Image (cartoon, rainbow, N blue to C red; front, top):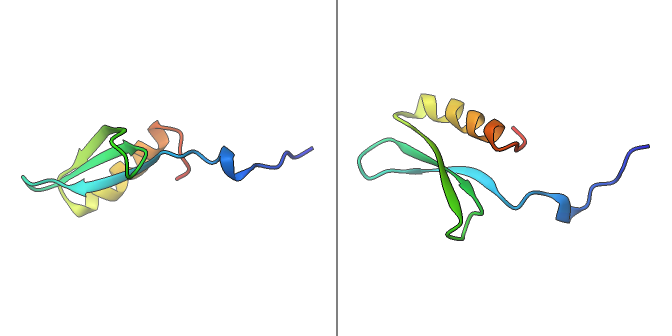
Amino acid sequence: MKTRRRITDKPAHSVWAEQSKKGGWIIYCGIKGTEQRTIAGGAANRETLDYNLRKARNKFGLKI
């Protein structure tokens, strides 16, 4: 039997990237809009950013 997932079961945390002042990107995981975040990685350019975002989502068990 398949169980129904509720909206509250959806994880509140997510993975996102912000551009750093020195150039490149910093990848964060946490609850967006709050101060609860963890640095999950970084990327030097746009090509590696997508790949590293996927790796970070996988690392924290989020949907890719």
